[in-house]
Image (cartoon, helix red, strand yellow):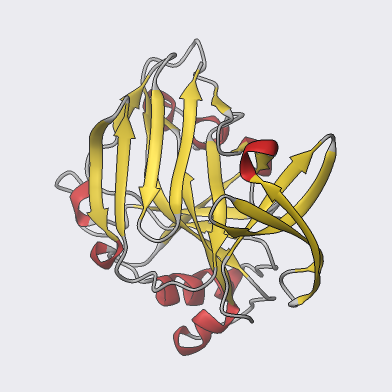
Length: 253
């Protein structure tokens, strides 16, 4: 892979495309970013001209529960990674709205690093895990706490429409083991952590998941959240900032 850069998905006048991001300029590319078989078109756009889409469309999406000690609230750390599924229909893009369900009493935003898989991954050992990663993006694991506690499964608590914002881009050249993550609600910092605080590392998580579930290029893994997440309500502005990647911003309605 070239020493890139950041990739994103965009729309202009109804036409969707993948682009390489260089500051405020986007270069349209043609082809498959996961196999690295793509051509640079030489067509450049200002990012202000474009609608930013979710940077990837996964076939499956998982998230880790209880992967930061500060989020355990006195519970014992899990004896193994604890992934759960989030539905693809819950994905939202940078600047999309987060829809707060009227019948949930408490909804939180969770700021998380998201791993984007780059090639088929099955029975991947820890020492080979990074070979199967394409890059990283920002994620918000929106969570309806009353449903999370009251329902027998987390299907709506974690996967209601718009409950999985990701973006705004995929960074392919970064060390994910030492990144600062900041979550803000209306400009106030509600979460702050470093990825070095994870209980289960990214390689261990990939080894564990792919023992049972095959991952495909574009699939996503939310790697967990820290501390006490910020409660959100209609009208709130939520920002997830990850060092070296960027800011994921969503307004609640």
